[in-house]
Image (cartoon, rainbow, N blue to C red; front, top):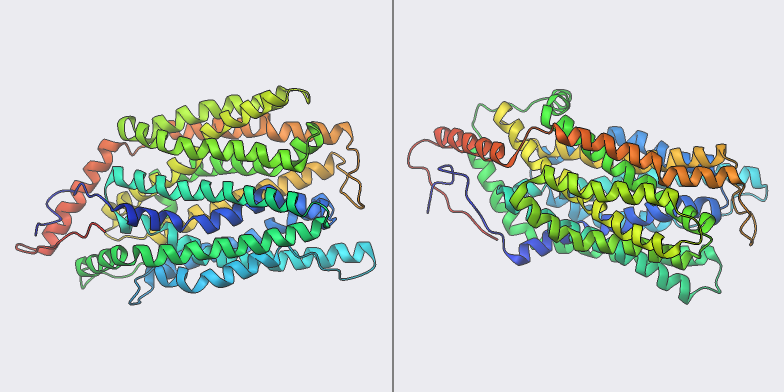
Length: 489
């Protein structure tokens, strides 16, 4: 037995705990990946929606998310259950999460009038999108808030997020492989049937890992919850929701993390949304080759997670972010410059982009627990749910904004949606818009993220100082002779 407040413990998590924790991001990653890569293409080329109308669907859903995410975050902070604060949300939200995702890939026929049917489809996909985003928040936001409850160690958190994004990127790759298998196996079936099967298979595969996570980390999380409750003082008053949100937004390090993550994720989502059009309409390749390009990006990002995690242990998160984004910038602008006959170079640039995509996943999320402890030092309370709510909101808003801007840009440039069995020839203005959306625009966004990362104030040394001050405070609150044991999972 030792006093945990004596110093920040260098704790080691078991391999099983890390695997179970990582599995919790597999399902949300699979669904988010298919939405990012295929949904806009599905709307315009399968459901036959106008690109401007299609690009507006998710944007409307995210207006509701602006209210939904902070509310779920605060509610999870205040949840009282024998399963702790976070796990009940994941346990009961997993099944409807999968069912609603499947419903997004149905193409209902509401009217024989094409114009009237467009608006009915728009209403259907908006409704399904809003409901799906609610359940995505219910399972994913409490999951992301588990990180500081599983471990307080600086390096272990980066390692834990490495496992998380191993499953996240691995799930993204798996969703692309599943898509390619279905497209090739059922290539003679209608395209709508292919996407319906893709939605069904992915719904099942994305639901099961959530249960693995819940039962795999339960012991560790409940132990942390008992310690948190025991350390609370009787005089501690809960802060109202509005004030909590204000504190989160006034947290200076969190302001930088918000900017860094939003720039990174917006660049990821804009690129992901435009890639199908770039490969098929500009490079003149097939849908199967499009999935191969994305597997090259995601496969490299998966492998680089472990490289960047080691670099981060030695040099810190900011250095990793700068290195990864340097490769990414070269790749994005290179895709703008290459010609349709330079297919091998396209694959090389896809691999290079994977170097940067991995840091977009790893670094911002590894910064959030440090920000939470900065806030705890300033306020005396832990509000993981509030901070993670904004991160999940940014993730979804980045996807929505990317699709919205892409849809409006393609419509303005004269992109022709598919109305029959033959893919229409696109005008030069649409091709130019596709190239700009994959090159100069994401490049400018990434440069803005690098500027913000340069001024991020929490270094590895600063984080250790924060933990020491928190440990001293807890020791003083607990009084002499109070001891506890640490469960290492």
